[in-house]
Amino acid sequence: MEIIVAKDYADLSRRACRIIASDIKKKPDLVLGLATGSTPLGTYQELVRLYREEGLDFSRVVTFNLDEYCGLSKDNPQSYHYYMFENFFKHVNIKPENIHIPDGTAVDVESHCRKYDEEIARHGGIDLQLLGIGHNGHIGFNEPGDELLTVTHVTELTPDTIKANSRFFNSMDEVPKKAITMGLGTIMQAKKIVLLASGKSKAGIMAELLDENAVSTKNPASFLLLHKDVTVIIDEEAAELLKK
Ligand code: PGA
Image 1 (cartoon, rainbow, N blue to C red):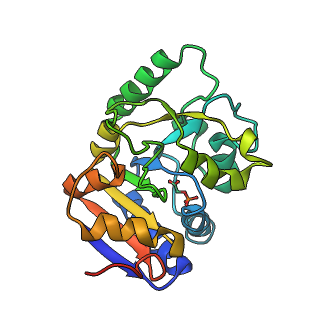
Image 2 (cartoon, protein in one colour; image 1 turned 90 degrees about the horizontal axis):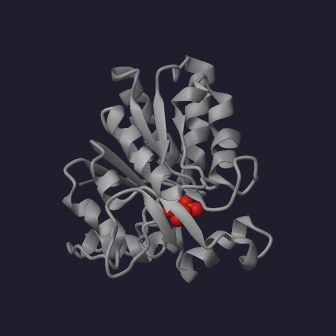
């Protein structure tokens, strides 16, 4: 695991963008796994800037998002579909047919999840997966628990996550209680993973992840310790409790 300590959020975003841009240049049909939340916003802004100023070409890039809330339609401003188009896709030359995001309104959700994994496999797997991390160690919406599922599935959000994500909604009651998420197996099969952590609120979980050398379903991100190509980009605030 490579750990890069960035000066601040802007530096973290530039560094993440540089890794993604360099991989797209090496492989123009890169299969890119994407995350939502506050943390990757700066990375998306930087990628959009590179598209505009340097012609970074997304025309052959294929994307798969980690997760989506159940029950929210694509045009709901709180959905991850909406987030992705507003913050990234509509500003670059990615082809709509190359964008994949779980559908929170799928009627046969089990079959939808199976097809999502099949589609990832059909594209040869994810080349580069971008991840954020929850305060409780979740990646995607793989929440801490007694077991973690390997495949894309429907999951119940923990009270912690509902509370953390309520900042994007009018009230806690409006936060969906379920989501579709890639499973730990799907994520771990990505050839390369970049995990971003920014701000003091992530310092505790990052110390747990990086100092303890232990894998536990109580901290889903800890499974990344078993992956052979993970880069963690952490800013100074999120790194402040690290012993190493
Ligand atoms: P955040 O969310 O980037 O908004 O902190 C991260 C996550 O919950 O995975």
